[in-house]
Image (tube, rainbow over all chains, first blue to last red; front, side):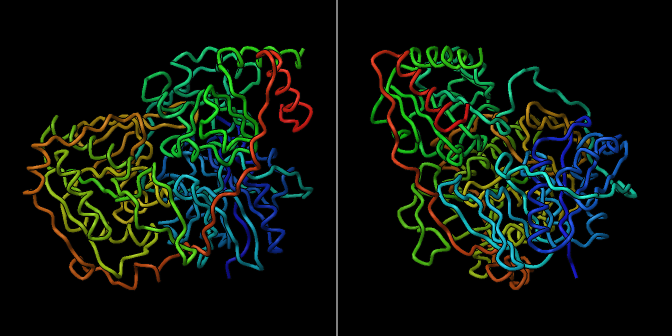
Length: 321
Length: 262
């Protein structure tokens, strides 16, 4: 009978993505709830050395698939290797992060294993042995409670939502046999944006600008720098060409879940709200006191962002000095 | 080049979505239905590839009879023909059920490249493209912002957090779209007139040889137990002051001392 929890971590160039700690921590909670073991899988090239970093989050076993062919993520190689590991482990639950890589992998793996997959979950609960998952639909306009039939149950959790928790376990590290199998894709280049800014979906604080910026994001960038925050944008700001598509927060852009979201000159179209409504705290700054964004915010300021934001940045800088 | 685009009819992203009385589905009356925005990018990309190197663009969808409208929209943009699978037994299929239907159609028609939206903006499952690729045993590339074809291969630039990667896949292949790929064209009036005469086949599960027991609501592995509106936030607290500096000081005090987020 399928049992155990299998957490799939994500690393890039030998550094774990933050979501890896989130899925191992959440995997530990599920495993404890089910009274079963947690295995954390690490895939990559020359990644054996980093596995020990996972131990403090309490896996019973870290399973490492180390192979030159896994240096860059490709759907086929990662799916082939993981399908083998999962068939051998026969887990009841698989958990991974719903990152850009994780969504691609989870979907292919679910089809390969003919397993049910709940994508982009923001809540994981146990009702007896059954997992009850909360996931946004319609870009967060509706929250669904879902259950998965059969095993394994695949849960892809939204990055930045699950709490990271340390757990004392004397886990083992085990090297897995790797058979990459047939691979029809290859990565020929990777380009990272040279920036000291935090990635939007991983940021604790996001400062976003909309039409009200008139295309001038200098004040937003300055506040983001003061707060060590990521910069986001509404669809209209992206459509105007003021920011790149990668910065768009919304139903047809990125979905973010920071601790603090500061919406500047954003009216609050449903489209935009869908991408940030699971933020813990929302601050809205807008000239128009009637803007719908205020109905969704915790704190509101009616005023000119070009005056408020520099004043805010100055106050924030006072804190750190 | 045989190009197939998978499309889905979904509620408009500006639509107010409400929960139906059964508690597990949404009210479908009074909703404006549109082509899934990511599928518009897929149709546009297929048209551009056909314009550059010839071929046929086929639009394939699973849905209600009403989904013919969405296929007609794609035909009006310039696609050549459409196939809709509609069957009461297919209603309520989850991603893998839907993929099974799409794959069954695809197994009977020629294709070099399949393009599909990264997700449908209704259930936001992000799964159908990958599941179709798996069922057809072809490679997939997700979240593509640039695609270039060259002898028997496709080179895709794929968005990742903080950057992009260039992935090469052998054809036939499937890729999913990300915003930034292109700007979809609007259907022209002559295009709309021409679309009315373009072939649109409507098929049932029996026509494509899919066992009704393997799809539909009964086959769902992902079961919706309940739908809820998102938790409502407490009423907004307005922060006021004489000058911008006073407002800023007050707001920073709240964020730093009170809720301790900065």
